[in-house]
Amino acid sequence: MLFRKKQKLSADRNLLGKWGQKQTKKFLKKKGYKTLAENFSCKTGEIDLIMADSSGTVVFVEVKTRTNEDFADAEAAVTAAKKQRLLRTAKFFTKKHKLENLPLRFDVVIIIANQKNKPQIKHYENAF
Image (cartoon, rainbow, N blue to C red; front, side, top):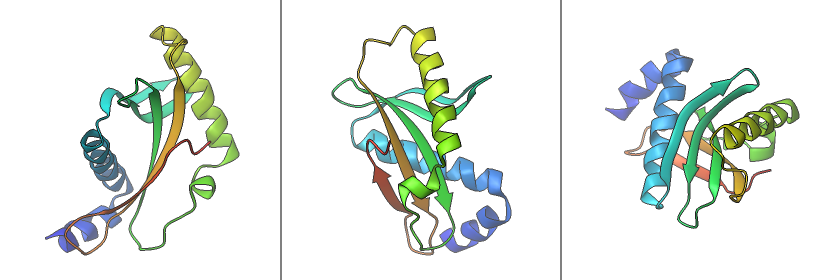
């Protein structure tokens, strides 16, 4: 069934991205994270997931979903320009929600939609 789903996902990048974000959210919740926001956007950019880990750190998560087995390096998956947009957007989010005094972290999660029973997930904590 995942194979047929993968064919549909690879044909629609938006659907693939949403699927990957859903898989990431489930994965992080199993690790004890709590969701603060999804698809947060403002004039400076967009952040896929904003979560809090068990220590109370606010984690800004960039999700990259792939359809092949080649894991991309987290640094290569998020360009310097993308990092700057994420930083500005995170700054706006923390100021808006009065979270400036909490510890912050940026993670990258790469999801591979493969033909096996479940997706492959690579979590890069504190990626930048």
